[in-house]
Length: 211
Ligand SMILES: C[S@@+](CC[C@H](N)C(=O)[O-])C[C@H]1O[C@@H](n2cnc3c(N)ncnc32)[C@H](O)[C@@H]1O
Image (cartoon, protein in one colour):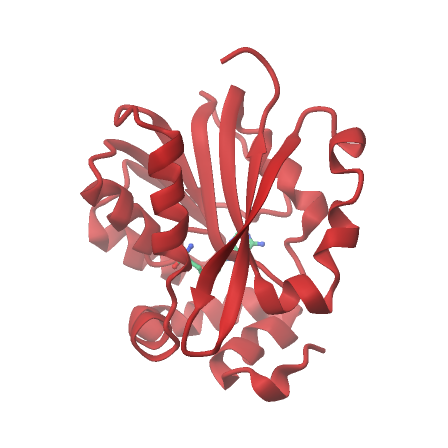
């Protein structure tokens, strides 16, 4: 159980019930954008997209937005001029919202605790607002780097409250040695849920190999 006394109930509901999380996100889909952005001050999407833009100037690059939710990230990337964005999420209702926004070339249902099957590897992946207290967790990061071209980068946010409470630094210790097909290049602190006074971490990962 998280220290959810200090968390908004909409957040603690999904964080404290890992077995029901998929259904809870289905329920949340229609009001998610309003609740998260307008009420909870969610800025993780803007922070991560800004950093992806700095790392990936090619607007033709193939990008996977995993755990895309309603499409906040896809919309930002589309506005920034990216043309080839695919999305995935395990909630069908979230995918319905993402489909309606028109930012994605294709959208598939996928659970990030499993490897991503993609016919063609991606130049980059972005995963925002998905990694926090329970699953998916550090051992599932390789499912994301596994869908990248050699040299491709993945930007993954982690909720800053979870970062402290479930000791993400310990989970990431020795990451590069444990997973030879992935490299943890950097960990940056970002704004995340401003109204809740929760910051975040941005993990910058790479699939090793020539670009
Ligand atoms: C807080 S929302 C973030 C959505 C979007 N990336 C954004 O920044 O607005 C978390 C999303 O992750 C999805 N999700 C949670 N656990 C997942 C898992 N194991 N596999 C795939 N999607 C997952 C949920 O369905 C939800 O859409």
